[in-house]
Length: 83
Ligand SMILES: [Zn+2]
Image: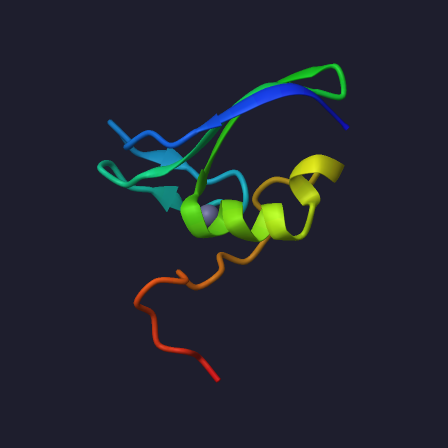
């Protein structure tokens, strides 16, 4: 249950680490930045755009998730289907 929070979409000014997949978010990449309070704990994390979409779709952003334990989804834009 989210107490409060805000997701913004900044462009990285330095390298960050994605909270979802644990991979680097390179400098210059637009990504999700969440700051807020969740379950009484202060949260401040960043995710790749596609990771944030995946997390959001699964409802795990609301329910809570284990950081760095997910597979990075393929970007939805411009990527060849893997099947
Ligand atoms: Zn990621």
